[in-house]
Image (cartoon, rainbow, N blue to C red):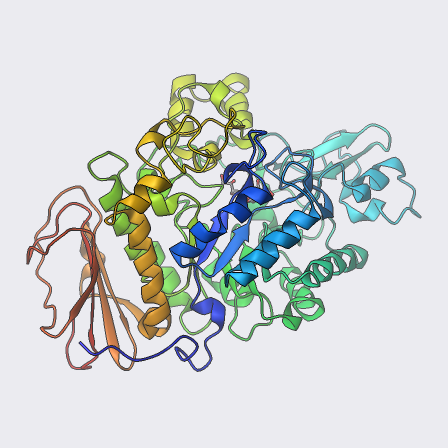
Length: 580
Ligand code: TEU
């Protein structure tokens, strides 16, 4: 079939480069250790740029590489303009940026400005002097006790209250995350100016954009009122109380004017608590705020029914619920805002273990199904390191194996302190949802530490690295790696993947096993059919005779049958009179 002969940049008259791009997320701590201290570093990333380029992506998102107190994987920054010495130095970063650009790769940095580290100079000055003429006091959110207690009932994302008492000043300071991560006061113009100055400093180095950590939480509600405490929960939900606050869009519009609009950047907001209505503001196509957002609804559907336990669960989400949510976001943002597309990242468990099937029989075929299902939707896809070779959850058996404070604090609070669930149940939940699942070292080869390091890594290597690794993936022409490579190439070649209107095929919303949708533009129709289950199903779709089978995860096609996790994507001319 004659394909539309577009070349990149002609895909949509108003298409922006990041609407046709694919992003590869590198968690530097676990990517490649080049100096054998057991921790990944910038030189290690430089040494692997050709691998990333070979995949075909356009952008590398680097999780935080700044000087840090190392409480929360770098999300506690003690100097926004210095490099974490464990990762290297500024010269290493500049070399990485330059070599990435030489290879046609852009670098998106991670902006963590809802909070800083407690060791940041600003906070140190804020704590030392509680007098009104200390400008740094108001860089953070200090409040007097109420009835001798915390100023409100908010809980931290990392267990415990969201307030810590400072004996010296007799006040509490707010931290939605760990007590070592004090929240910055975005209502203070001086804070906003300091942050915009820092962003422009990085802009001058030639970076290509920012992923913005919990940016939906920066504008706190007036008066910091108590939040509703769900039945059985210990605290009010500070995320819900702070998300999409009264001035968040004012502050992002200000950031856009002061920094973002001067550059042809990619920007994505990590927007905990975002709704489709809010996303239309954050990621509006007029470009007055950000390019796109990460929403969290599809990765929250399998949370625990008991709100006290939140994400801690080992539930498997149903296709009915997952499809309904993904369809909602595809349709709600169409023509109004831009979606990001992701299954996993450094905070989420491995996609194949969570949404697919990580058994030896179905790991690759279900991984390919998930990849195709997501990458043919409208939005910018994000591939998390190791996803492209089908890495799986870590399956740790002992608490001592976990390093992430979110997991460790939750275990202490839910099992040891509140006795809400037995240890063995929590261990199952950690195996299913701990952030450490996605932070085990990248699996490069089958040697002792998977080629990540020559010494014991900071976090255990997944035991299955002997069979699941980059060397194997590059050797095997039917591997997930080459499947992702083809999906990325198709996105760069086929306009309909960027500009096609999304819709489910007739009656698919009732199908409990198969997710089937089309993308249509004036000239072409893309049809994606995915069996989300481990069972074979029979389905008859009237595939037009002149269609092209673009990609599939089985070696052949058995008409009217879809084998376990089978996915097929077809392309055919848009005759406009044929309904699929
Ligand atoms: O994550 C924000 C966030 O909402 C996470 O706490 C997420 O909901 C949770 O980890 C799911 O289990 C961002 C960063 O991605 C995360 O790594 C940081 O720990 C957090 O902010 C604080 O900066």
